[in-house]
Image (tube, rainbow, N blue to C red; front, side, top):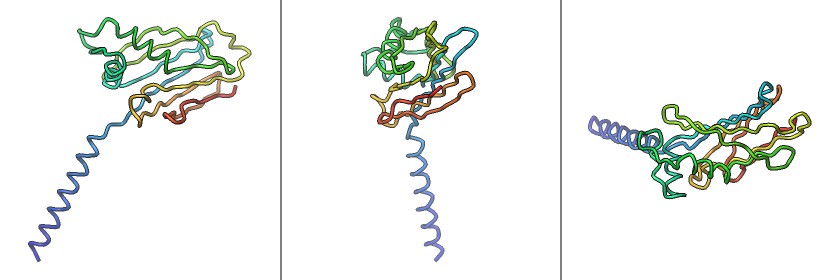
Length: 172
């Protein structure tokens, strides 16, 4: 009887360790984008936070670049290709029309790259809808989730965008 108890405990312990090892091996794929209207600047200010290792994998698989982001050996073309990728996968629409934005640059915060975009001097006073299509990393990771927070003159809305549902809209 005692031997059976020890065997059950050993099996339970082994199963728990096995399950936990699989849980830690599974990665969560997420980006967070904030779209905020600044009345003082009369501009839409956009920040997008993406894990550095995911961005590096993307740059290597899509463009063949070993970016080495956030290191002294960072590829000189990193910004150029990050901007190129954003232009292909991140679309902002004002009243249903794609709106150009400026890629201002990026910085690093621990294991995250923060990209800065801006839409300036648009006709914001008469704006009725603001849409965001965010396909960042959905071509690389099926589980990718892109969280988008929009703040506009007292209006707030958040979306979780995925490969199959990659667009969110705020009615103003």
